Image 1 (cartoon, helix red, strand yellow):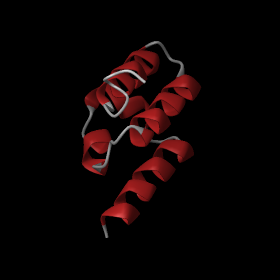
Image 2: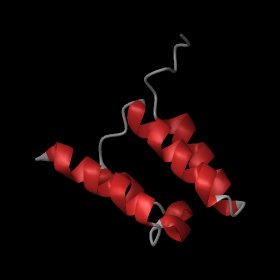
Image 3: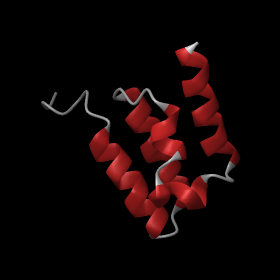
Length: 72
């Protein structure tokens, strides 16, 4: 395991990059990995301008909803 195994930020950066490239499917996978590695706050995704193109995607909405449910 690398020292970054519990760091969600590299996966979030990948998601932003894949979104910019128009690869929404891979961006969603990257977001799932970010959550696995400790991303906890749905606001991080909702307020990220680089992820705006994903916000209408059902899978993106599902990830945000799951994070919100974990907060309660």
